[in-house]
Amino acid sequence: MYCQNCYLNFEQKMNHPQKRVKMTNDSYITKLDIRNVKLKRGLLSKLDVELTERCNNNCIHCYINLPPDDPVAKGRELSTEETKDIIKQAADLGCLSMLFTGGESLLREDFEEIYVYTRKNGIKVFIFTNATLIDTKMIDLFKRIPLLGKIEITVYGMKKKSYEAVSRVPGSYEAAWRGINLLLENKIPFLVKSVVLPPTKDEIPEFNAWAATIPGMDDPANSTMYLDLRANHDSEIKNRQIKGLRLSSEEFLDFNLHLADDYLADLVDFCSRCGGAQGDSLFPCDAAKHNKGCVDAYGRLKPCIGLSNPETAYDLKKGTLKDAITNFFPKVREMKAKNPEYLARCARCYLRGICEQCPGKAWAEYGTMDTPIQYLCDIVHLQARRAGLLNEGEMSWEVEDWEERLKKFKAESPNTSL
Image (cartoon, rainbow, N blue to C red; front, side, top):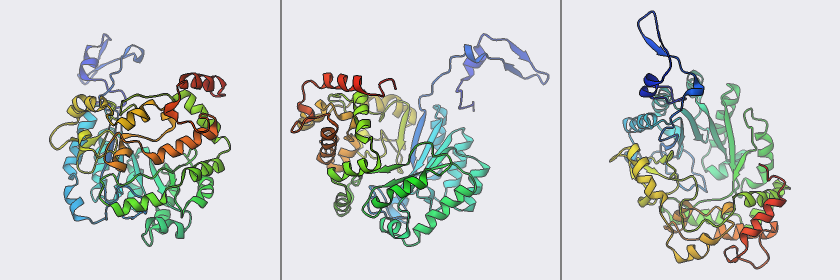
């Protein structure tokens, strides 16, 4: 196993035109001047691995969670050896970074074995968790074998009442804060984020102030405001519940303005640099790029973890990561929208840079990848009108001079040099 940080293969080392030095123990090394070495980029730099869809919380807004002891889910999940095989394949392809997510990733009984195996393969680890299962044994593990990445914790409330109104599990508030305090006491790096929900939205300023005191929180904490429907279309009842938790477009804008006075100015600046019509391509984002991927709990490699369309998933139980990355994902990246409504609206919309419309969200919402999501459209149009990106009554896909507008906004932006 070669060092994952430089990813130099054997042939590069042995054939490099530098002087070899004879060692006293009859082994050989090659001295390399790093300025003269062309580093080889691996086929895969980052892999997200969903260890389970099961969770010990039962959050009111969750798009994926299954009960912690769900026998069907447990029976379908990748085994320890299957998971380790994927990790080994990822390491062989040059993977440097791996995210373990869920459900609740720490719920897996074999989590420690999977974690240690990943680190032994030279891969730094990131973890998404609710922190309720972090105990002294896990702290000892992370101190003995550091992640090199960070733990990212979703905090569902600053008070017991709000937290458990979201998690719907008695005792989860105390368990989560016990885990958070263990991390703080032992100086193990972590980040926090939250979700804007009816029980939590009034606590977000308090949450942000607390988050700013955490060592290693270099950027302001993120609070999720977009709530996705169930990715697997497994419960219409839960979908109706999630829709009922969403902020209206007016509430969405007012909430952001309350948190940041320069919200609209930042919106204009970002759109001036990243806006523009993106045509009929379904994947203009990072999804399906050749050096990234997401593996779900059942061994399917996807462009993003929320996209459950079987047409964009590769079964790793029947093939390899290398084949998926080199042969399957290029075909996914070439997928085009066919829905006439999408082509008339989203494909021509110059606000796509500030809109959350994507194949994963569309699939969860409608079971297609190219249906415009009206909820997202309402949010972005209201923001654009308030920011001066759109005139009253205009629809973004009807604007003919959008390129001139973006040039004008960019020229006026104080952050043009960024």
